[in-house]
Image (cartoon, rainbow, N blue to C red; front, side):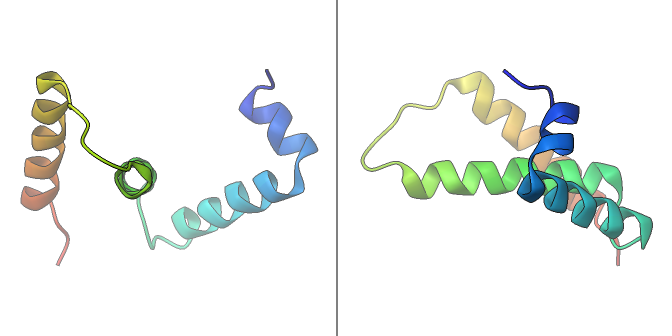
Length: 78
């Protein structure tokens, strides 16, 4: 399995995504923490849409998502 740095050096699409994200941080449009949150949320949305049918989410996952959501709501920039 390749490391992220190896992927960056060898995969044009991966490099482009990394550089796009870096530019958003550099332009102060998003903080690194917001980028991580966005990536996590994108993955969650993808999994939710991809899943057909009912799945059981472990309680500790729900608790963690609630903590993230509470933090996000209380730290939104105006």
